[in-house]
Length: 328
Image (cartoon, rainbow, N blue to C red; front, side, top):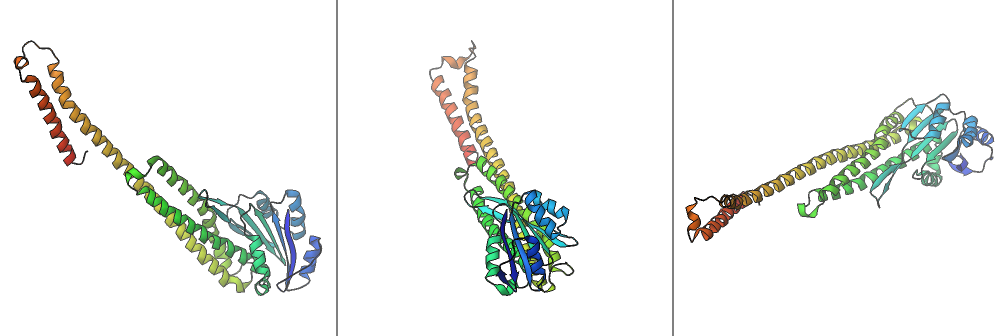
């Protein structure tokens, strides 16, 4: 569906014809005007009219309709095609999900296609309309503003993930009596999946932003290069944060597995110690339970208390030894 359609002249929104072809023709009559159309999850029939009127490349149209694309930048004869993946962080479930945003830029037009509900297009359009000086730079300003908004939100999400990681570290390195090992391992794996989802959005976007910050990209004004360099710099910081999160998660997982191994060893030592203490009276009782005829001490009046005392002293001695060595 078409969310918004407007002609912007000298940075100001103006009323234009409802027909795409007439609106584009009107925008192209003036050097300081362009047409911006926003679509949300359009059907093939809805997008056919737009793609025909603006001469969009069939491969780019196919990508825009099917979605599920990696962030990228493609240059065609009549347009520039960019794919970004805005992300949203759900604080209630501590999960990261990514949507998709496609941007077509050409001669006096911008077409944005979004899949999902997290793309910041409405906010970007409002901010640009409130600042005509920036919007007066044409389609390049729209591409920059959208890229900047998406990457800035990456920084916010990276901060939220950093907080979650610190909470996970506290859980993993808590005293053994205060943590659930099975739930902790599942939490680490789930968190690693969230970081991977975030990384799929931020990592591949580095190359497109670097290209936009360089020279020779058609339909992008040369004066915008410093601004795209700023976006690329912010994106680099985000990618460094994501790399750090991933490394720390691997370290936390290794530490958790090591802790589990130590705890299992402690449990095995305790079991072995109790089994050794139980073996002494079992052995003595087993000997006296053989019913031999020639056991002189059986007829001694103090045999029973002596044997019981011996077993108690032996168990007590073993218990002290195991306690001293930290087995109990």
